Length: 213
Image 1 (cartoon, rainbow, N blue to C red):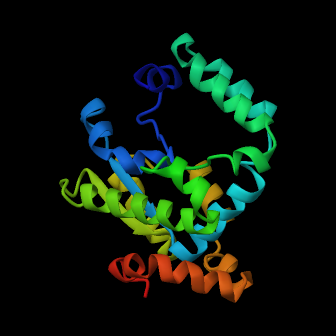
Image 2: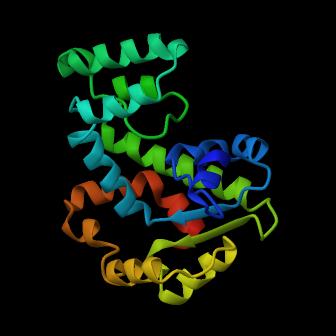
């Protein structure tokens, strides 16, 4: 990471792997001067988006993605990759849906015994709750959280300040070009009411804890 920052002549590297929500303590020990920027999305929309990936993206063998992984490949990882490739090539009636997203504890068993929509609910809850619990124990200059539904140009400025980054005309133009105040909630508005009710039953306590419900 340090080499990547130096080679680009930049100030910071942004690493946005969602699974890091499950291991903030580990990341903090590896990168003791890092800052955590926690973007929270309404669980109703987030679970629906995750479910779409489980249903449509995780079931497809993607050569492009495999190319990326092979570029990062280490010999000690060979058994894992061989198992994953075989699983993706086998009929889904034999293997069940491919794993996707943060590997919360018990995910393998959940895949065999639970509906994917319910799994997505648990993924969202665990990731958000663990990130909040650990992050809120850190000093305010190390951890910042915000709800994507509350994003505004002023909040954008606050994020830059928190990250100790100078404003950049190209970044601001990109942000303003993609900033759509009415976009959050679009998935929920188009979803099956029965699915929304199922999701709410699983994540209601966390929604309330975060101030969404």
